[in-house]
Structure formats: structure tokens, C-alpha cells
Amino acid sequence: MPSRSALLILVLMGELAACSPRLDWREVRIPDTALKALLPCRPASQARRLVLAGSEVEMSMLACTADGVVFAVASVDLAQPGLVGAAMAELHAVAARNLGAPPQVRAAFQVPGSTPNAQAGIASFTGMLGDGRRVEEKIAVFARGTRVYQATMLGPSVEMEASEAFFGGLHFAN
Image 1: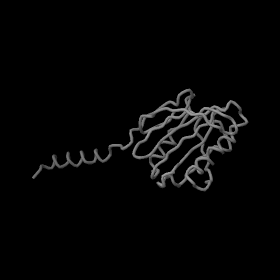
Image 2 (image 1 turned 90 degrees about the vertical axis):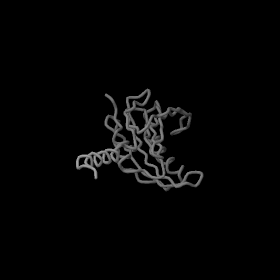
Image 3 (image 1 turned 30 degrees about the horizontal axis):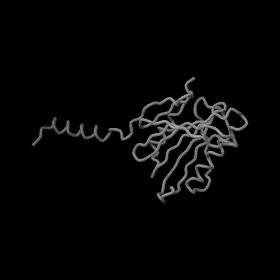
Image 4 (image 1 turned 180 degrees about the horizontal axis):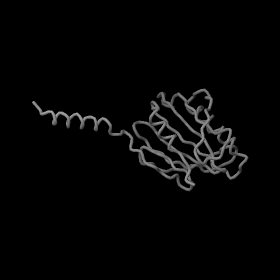
């Protein structure tokens, strides 16, 4: 029979193993911006041209997948202050439409250091991918000056703890 101290060591080792994180959070600076984000995996960058608020722009994105969930932060510089609010509203509408989900009411969302805007907000959607798989998506849209940002989690389920870490980790460096 194992000694009492050996049993205690085994119990502590089991507890430490149970506490090991599934997600490896790290702070990442979003290229060409002052935004910093917490991501649970090493992101890859990509860019694409799109029409947003009636203007053709290039959207850049850092994204990675961890624990079956895609974590992404995208940004686009609209160069015209008058387009910012319309672009943020459009990003929310497109997210819902892409999943075949009804438009959702946005809750207020303010990233420390962002420019206050009535269209800034966070929303959750449940819908289907093109292949019929059910997914959940949570997005936050906000701006700083003429640059609009969208932070996204997309997967079979969006866990509260990961959501709080991801969205709570967004902030601007001076």
C-alpha cells in the first residue's frame, strides 16, 4: 500500500494535470495597428479585398484554430470617418447572414482605447455552415479612428470562459 505522502503526491499530480490549459493564450499585436489581442494559438495572417460600406477595401486578419474553435481578429482602414458606423453595422449583418441566422441585438462593447461609436457591439449567432454543420459565432465590432475591427469566435460551441478571455483581452497600446 502506498504511503500517505506518495498518495498526496499522486493526488497533487492529478490535480495539476487537470488544471493544464487546453488553450495556450498569448498576447499578439495586430499588424499595422495599436490593437493587442489574446489568442489561444499561433495565428496565421491573411488579407483579402472586399466591399464594405460601399468602398472597396483590404481587410487583414490574424486567425487560428484551437479546441475546434476559430479565433480571428480582422481590421480594415476605411480612410473616411463617415463610413465607420455603416461598416460596423454591415459586419454584424453579414455575420448573421453567413450562418443563416436572424439578426441579433448587439450588446454594448467597448475595447479600452477604442473610439466610442453607437454601432460598436458584441453579438452571438447560432446557424449553419454551407455543409450543414451547426455552429455558434460570437463577434465584437469596434473602431479606432477610421479603422474598424471585428473579433470573432466560430465553432461547434463558444465556451464562456474562452469567450471572456478572448474578448476581454482586446486592448489598444497607447
